[in-house]
Image 1 (spheres, rainbow, N blue to C red):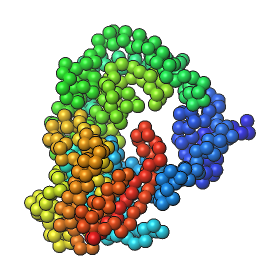
Image 2 (image 1 turned 90 degrees about the horizontal axis):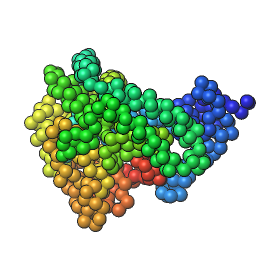
Image 3 (image 1 turned 135 degrees about the vertical axis):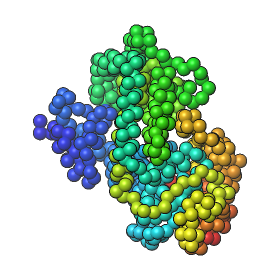
Image 4 (image 1 turned 60 degrees about the horizontal axis):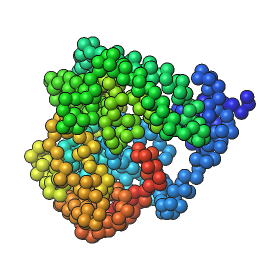
Length: 525
């Protein structure tokens, strides 16, 4: 027994062994996903020190070396921010809503704050400066600028992106938000009393629990898969087909409606009918809220909720394939899983989480100006827009001008920024401007797409230069695998004065191979 450790003891041992904080949750994760075997029963879980040591020898301490062999010795591991836990890279309002392609707040802080180090030997911005993000996305730059006592302006062609950004930096009457959310939750519960999908789902969960306990015992099942003692594909298919007999009988018994009457919009296709009914109900309640800022925040909570309730498998949340209307073998969780039949639990969970995150950010934000505008950064007149809509900030902007840019332009042919939030465009009826996206997925990555991308980004920079002060600093985060940014700098009459090549860790995509991006530091050419 001397080599067996409790989860708490294992976290302490592992922290000392690798020289980095390892929490009990980290150890539990390794057990749950079959990285190391569990000893003992559920009430008394133990870890063998030799199993843990073997795991860390194979997986820790060599990642930097492995990545540098693949990506080059110029990889700046300092900018990996590997010392931060996931909860720190998604702190406070940064996790109010999912968004593909956003950078972590620590990267923004690194270049905007006053610190210097071996790589950043001078600070580029001072308190009170104005930062511009012409590809604002979900507003990470704006939020971090507020923390650092900097003003910031964002522009994005996507109306929903601007909505996310402005909700994050909004100011709220939290008592009103909490009261309004609770009222809607109560009304939703009453709405569900007239239906039977909650009772059905509870019965289904009981059946799944019994079935999974028998045929997919965790973590033993996942450990056997990793050891190739079980053919996961054939076994998972066999057992999922067995459980379908139970599932379809319950569907018939409770008369659950799965398919909507229409199949035209995203909301029609990707949500079970019982779920769509709840979405429409809650949205109608939100429309009746009087306080405009509260209404916006509740709308974002609903958007976050329905994104989690799409009729798809857990493995395909990032890239939708086909709608799922029945139970299925889930490779991600190593058991039989199900689609969602109600939004109640997610709505309740996200309502509380959002309020907590808004309160956390309230303690950190400064009394500075932040705003994201909907528009095309190639032609957008910042001075006019501010003067017409925010006269109190107009003099500050015109007298000081913008000190610099920190932004991440879309990558060539990687993401359709409107389509990733198609459910929100359907629900809120925002106007879509897909044709104005630079580097959109549907345009591909061919030579014509690259040429269009170069012209698009350089047009943005040339337009924005009109509003920058003389000694500006521009930082653009890009995965420049096609070598386009020297061309972009030339067309923008800028020069690249430095490049920071950083590894991108903790990616949500299925492809977790070594991956790097470059932060291009550009100034007047």
